[in-house]
Length: 256
Image 1 (tube, rainbow, N blue to C red):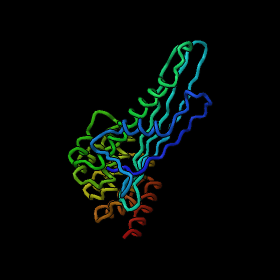
Image 2 (image 1 turned 90 degrees about the vertical axis):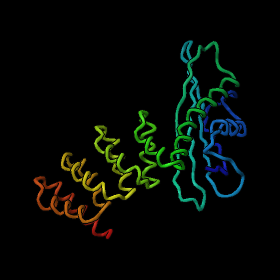
Image 3 (image 1 turned 180 degrees about the horizontal axis):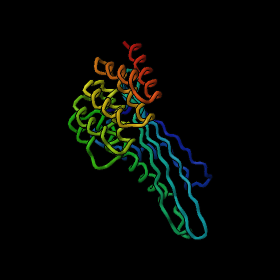
Image 4 (image 1 turned 180 degrees about the vertical axis):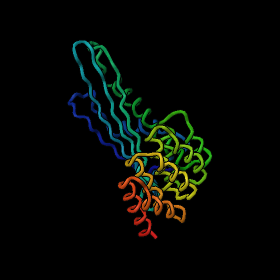
């Protein structure tokens, strides 16, 4: 992934000199944080624009203080690139005794640490976006929920069919946030193998949960999806769910 432009936005509101940073110095720290084989830097050609936002502040109460660095890194595809923005954010805090207030150098190191931590999240996304399909599928099963969540989203972005079987397993997750994300990825991929598992899931949920699944079934379409929505729309005990199925069937027909 090639970065062709870097924009730095200092959101720091304090007037303290130690909390004000030179934009060129911040860019150097960003480049160090994103030093990775998946990222290259250039001043011309097609590539991504990197938006860097940061804010430094400190709070002191009695003899204790906290230095805080909030960072946002956002990669936006340039003109002609068929891709999606990637974004990583984070806040890093450092406690200190008020008599040992951090000066310019320590504040810079703290910001560098925050950029490094947030940069790891962004680099993970770049590797999963442009890397091998097998690496993306493995990340779907990672023990780290942040890695898994990123992989689910990017599986949909990449329309990665090799991820379908694992995404179908994630549909059964007791974590509703994970299962909902899996639905979104499966719909984005458009593999109709997901229709039957989604139909089975819709039988188990409440009206709110069923609505999400119905939308997914309608988006995937096909004969099996149509037959299921017609059945639910005409014969379900719950009038609200019957109405949802009819509305989903109508949306599916419009797409055709």
